[in-house]
Length: 377
Ligand SMILES: CC(C)(COP(=O)(O)OP(=O)(O)OC[C@H]1O[C@@H](n2cnc3c(N)ncnc32)[C@H](O)[C@@H]1OP(=O)(O)O)[C@@H](O)C(=O)NCCC(=O)NCCSC(=O)CCS(=O)O
Image (cartoon, rainbow, N blue to C red):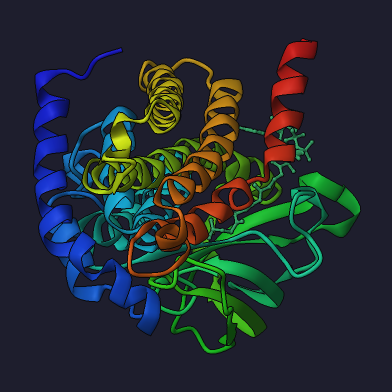
């Protein structure tokens, strides 16, 4: 599949911004754990916060293919920054587009798509990850309010975000059909950042544990109907997985490009190591894997843009791209030898940044469950 002129123009614009304003800072942010607030504003101005949100809701009015292209570019500059943008687009904006009422769209979707707000997605809990239907957080209706109590874990932008989509149990007896979804502004009393995780990589994005203690929100902040929460969450993760897959390709591409550049400079046995077949074949394999993953992602995104089912294809894209990316980043380290293992070169950081793509927004094992279910039909 090839990109249209319009998609190529988007790719060029975002690549130019990322290479000038983000990539040069990625190593420093990795060390200082700095949140790239200023650069995120620049990405918002380019339309990266609400890529597939229509212009009437202040989005860029593009599509999921454009989102895939954009996230690859951002991730090629910095993995953590791409995660922040990815979550804001999908699941957050995508859920609001599909399930928010007009009042909620005006209050939340518009600022999220413009970049005046940043979104977070609160599904995972300390003891509930892959089994999304097993949540413990509760939301109890009290008159015109809901009161939320519980703990959410591994929440991207849990600290720096302005509004979170929170899944909580409203009817325990109804099991998976007793979960509801809520919009919770993060300044609401009872929303507390309990801790920021010390992660292996992606240090420029905050990953927080959030405590909900008698967190009272108006009932008008419920998304959809009571009991629709799991469906809302899982539908948002479908597009989110295309986003994470795109990030994986972006990071793998950056590692591949670093390996090629190094191989052309580094001389051994009288010639650049690029000329050694052992290295050139490795680079050829890496490039092929990156392109194969990209094509799976673009295929899934195109299905979504055409309004066709893509749960299986999104799962395949995430599974393949995230597993591919770790292998390609590891191979990049091998090409650089000792220099790949130290932080003078970017591949060591990218290898750490990319590892989580096999875990967040559904582990590789969860993707296999989804693919297996589709094969059983
Ligand atoms: C492992 C699972 C796939 C198991 O799912 P379940 O069997 O418990 O759920 P289902 O019965 O399949 O679905 C429930 C309900 O939702 C509807 N559904 C499912 N997918 C979609 C979709 N793509 N679009 C629309 N609707 C959908 C389905 O039809 C059912 O509705 P009905 O009963 O038919 O009305 C699942 O638990 C799973 O995916 N687990 C992984 C969870 C996950 O990815 N967690 C990570 C969260 S994000 C995170 O890690 C934090 C990082 S960040 O900040 O993003």
